[in-house]
Image (cartoon, rainbow, N blue to C red; front, side, top):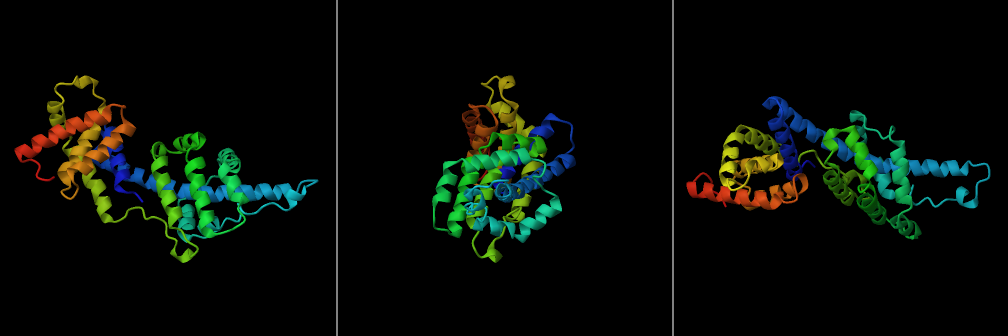
Length: 306
C-alpha cells in the first residue's frame, strides 16, 4: 500500500524537517518509517469509517421504530443501505478486525463527524439513486461505497480537519490513502476468503527504496545543493523556496541512486510533488534546474543512464 509515490512524498517531508531542524540521521529515519506506519493506520481507519457510517444509520432506524408514534416508514424502512453486501464482507474481514483491534483505532470520539458525514451521504443524489434501484448485487453495493467515498466523504473539509488534528502525519495523506481505499473496494468480491487488504509494502524492494532514497538525500545533500546553486546562478538564490531546494535534492538522490528508474520518470514524479507541495511556479522551475544538472552530469560522466 505504501507505494513509491507516497514514499517520495514522505522522504521529501522528512528531509525538509531534517534540514530545517537539529535531528540526527537515525532519529529522522525512524520518523520516516513511523510516518509510513501512520499512513497505514489511516488506510484502515478509512475502511472502518464506512462500517461506522452504516452502524450509525442502523441505530438511527432502530430509534425511529422506538418512537412513541412511529410512522409506517419508521416501522418498515428501506434496509438496502444498512444491509449493503460490501459492508458486510468488510465487517467480516479478519485482517481489518485484527489491525483495528491491535492499533486501537476507533471513531467513538468523533460522533459529530459521523453524524455530518452520514447526513452528507443520505442527502446526496448518489444515495437517492442507489436506494431507488430495485435490483440488488454485490457489485452495485460495492460501487455505491466507492462513489460515496470519492465524491462525498473524501471531499469533506471537516474530515480533513479532524484527521489533521489527530495526527500531523495525516496532514497531506488523505487524498493519496483514499485512492488506496478505493482500490481495495474494487478488489473485494462476494468470496470473502479472497478479500485481502493491501500490504503495507508491495515487497522489500519498496522498503529498501525508502531507506536508500532518504539516506542518500541526507548524505549527499551538500553536494546536490552545490549543483543546484551552480545551475540556478541566474536566479536570486535567497528567493528560491526552500521546499524547492529539498525536492531537487531528493530528486537528484533518486536519479543517482537507482539505475533501474529512468531519469524522465524521476523528473516527472518530483515535478508533480512540487506542484502540490510548493509554489505554483515550482514545477516549471524545478524541471528547468534538474534538466540542466542532469545534462551536465551526463557530459561529465557522473551519470550514465537515460
